[in-house]
Length: 216
Ligand code: PCA
Image (tube, rainbow, N blue to C red; front, side, top):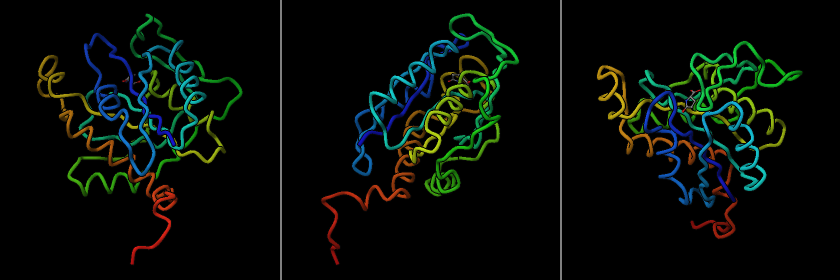
């Protein structure tokens, strides 16, 4: 069983993106008998959906969580809804800045996350990580990937969604020291927990063949 965990390459002139740092740190880890498979998506409207679709076809995951960086946010930000809108505030890594266009023509206006968002938020907070729900993943490449993901998996019974991460302390230190940030170790721990919460809710742990018999 595979968990697809995506991150993005750095964008907007940054040298690092916490989303990929977290994803690659968790690559290969086994959570509730499923293996994390990390993939880095280009921060490109032209390239990201294709890379996502390739990874879905290759891995046939039981759970998909896409990660992105949201500078300025102070908490692990669990996105609720992907909208069918691209309206880029800055250029992507290919120099493209599409505005006021749909992610997909003739598709629904929005899709909701199918992750257990409130259980995730509560578990993260209980473990000491600032976390919250967000009603907007923006209108840049992250929202595009989130929308494409939910569109592709609609009705498939595979939980999927998007989580935005704060900047890393070194990014804040370099660009704007008052910007909220969260250390990499805490971000990794939070996302590991978010994956575990989802799989526990899905009954993946109970379904482990070696755990079929009750122990007491
Ligand atoms: N964040 C951007 C795109 C890549 C990333 O990490 C976003 O929020 O759209």
